[in-house]
Length: 249
Ligand code: NDP
Ligand code: 8X3
Image (cartoon, rainbow, N blue to C red; front, side, top):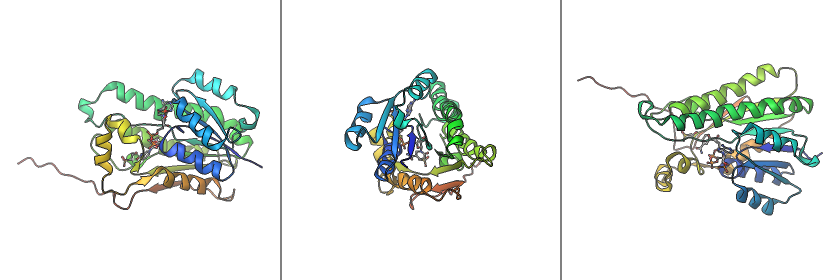
């Protein structure tokens, strides 16, 4: 039987790669994001029988409800929710940060993610489905300027693990994927600068959206008795040694 995934943030980076990987393995995907032309390109590439698109802002609950209500029959029964849409905005220290950036990250990474998850849980339970969320190493290892992004990703990591406890006995599998540096549009969005993004990833040999998508596909296709709780990935050239001291003299 063909399975169906609901992938948020499918217009770029990890989400777009995930749709390609899942469709390549025979799945159907509901692909979401705010850029219709990117969604249209996925359909042109992969086929309307494999990809249904829903163009909306995940922070807009009414638009989410409309998108869910208008899913065509072939895409209505969701077996896998990939909670991927998210962003960082800014790298300022907390004391200088822009409050609108903070609100945007909380609304997108936290609030929209829990709302969508809550809405899909009944049918995921009914179908013995699965949830895979893209948290981040930023939720575990802190760095200057991470502040609200780090907090929002710690929330994603922990909320996802907490779901496992509530879903005990339902057969629903839940996984928190926590990547380090993946070269996508993430840093362009965070900084507003392609140059800043190029500078960050230069010489690092960072992970790619395809690397994370392959991990998602692997987890999604494991035997149903097996649950990967959390998985942390980094490029070899990134690590987590981050302690600093400030001296008073
Ligand atoms: P990209 O910027 O390439 O992709 C982000 C995706 O999220 C886009 O498809 C974007 O779609 C979507 N999105 C953002 N805001 C909204 C919104 N309000 N409504 C609907 N869709 C939205 O970044 P990545 O692929 O790297 O990021 C995917 C996830 O991975 C994020 O949650 C990020 O925090 C996480 N992550 C990324 C890492 C990295 O190093 N890149 C590392 C660890 C985690 P659109 O703009 O069209 O709406
Ligand atoms: C982003 C991961 O390592 O670029 O979630 O901060 S990192």
